[in-house]
Image 1: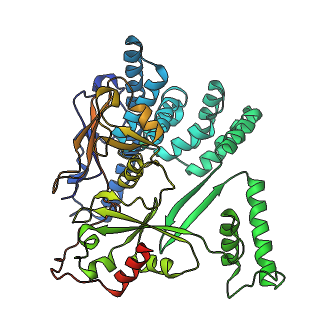
Image 2: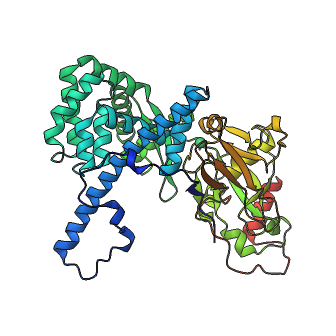
Image 3: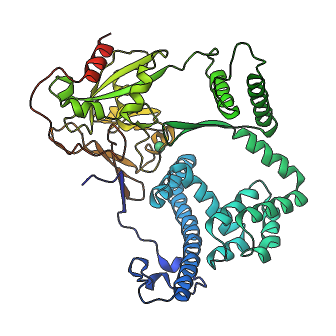
Length: 476
Ligand SMILES: [Zn+2]
């Protein structure tokens, strides 16, 4: 059975229940066993009532988590000060520990820590409503976010003003209400909020179904609207036949806008296709020419840093002929799960080891992090005698690499991933508080991959027409 990407478990150190204020919760979490709830025999009224009670309980749990989070952070800071440890690195580590405990990214862990402090120390009405189950964690998050730039006394005032409406309004309505009260109290805070928002402008890309992807630009409203209007106007002129260099060719307005945006962003001239780099995975059988032709033809291709794509789609890109195509051969174990070597025919990127690590780990190896790999980290420090090699390496984001240097924090290689037939590369993280979490390298074709179920044929051959075509492509 494949190991889950992360298996976190607390290693001792339970939170003392007596330190936590008792809550006015009707359902006692200790007596409730959600997994054992049996809907059989309940009528619709009882079923709906139970759903409602569980929703209240989830909110009450979020309130309890906030109180426990603040108490945990305070205890960690006291200990760090006693030991003379750096405050900034303690804050980073606390956020990372909260994240591991909540199965979230470190970035989210920081935000949860900030939300917990706001709820416990500055937003008593919101906290009361959350604990009573009148609002959910998302509504509390919205109120905290909308008041984040206010002075403490103003924040408390907004909290008090919204108090009677908590439980009646949707999170979006609460957000608007909080913004209105904040603007009345402190107009300058609205400007600060907008400045903060502008600082968060960014571009992101994420896969969409059917071989598509979303490219999102988050920017200031006037610039985003202006760019959109320009794209619409350009598409209109193409559809109206006013662009001699670009014909509609059966495209609608949306398609012309998308084509134009992507072409301009990648700096291509009209009609010039996008170059693509396709990672082609080969097993050692197919490398040695004794593989099953049917298997090779069906092996999905992996587009670097994005997602698996069906082999037929990748073949379509390759056959296009107009685009420059880079191919890289990745050699895997016989079952095709783990990467063992890569062909460095294309040497434009950095060192081979780093390249191998980025391909093996794909994203930061901290469980739940999912940030891009920035640092190729020695799991056992080089200064402590840790060797430089794939087995003693983990791809980490910058933040997780800094967190790893926190006093008391350690990472161990549990499996090197190099033993024939052995487990895949696995590391174990132990935090300063003693929480442990394991992280296994993903299959080279991404999570969700499963080994082929058919037996490879024994007869060597020179491959299917597709394999011959790809072989000539690779040899070129
Ligand atoms: Zn990370």
